[in-house]
Length: 133
Image (cartoon, rainbow, N blue to C red; front, side, top):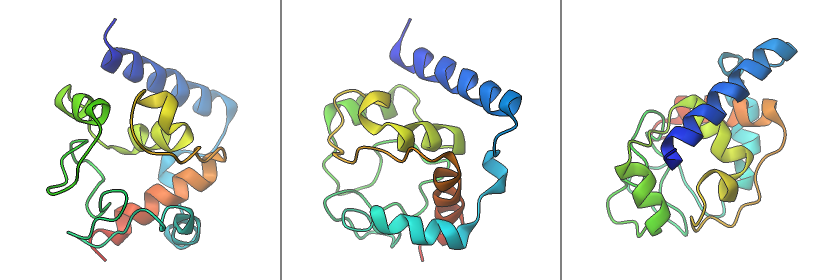
């Protein structure tokens, strides 16, 4: 089974478990709360188009191909994920934010992840709303 297929299978299982458990859905994000939670990300990332830091700009990340910000030097793992069809949709972002190192083994991001599902949902809502802020 390819890495991309394993990721998609994992996402499907995660989504099903969330629905069955009655947990928050990705549609319930609060952009204002997400902006606050994004402070954890702000040391390395911006939501300003074309402004890379230690990490790439996250402007327009939602529904964008992984590893595609011009001028940013990605890890081989992230480039392979993107080349294999990795798209940063809400479900993929959620899984990645929960466990960046586990989701894409070998990527450079040192962040340990956001364990709180609502916090991840809020950050994703903020990223959708901030689009190039």
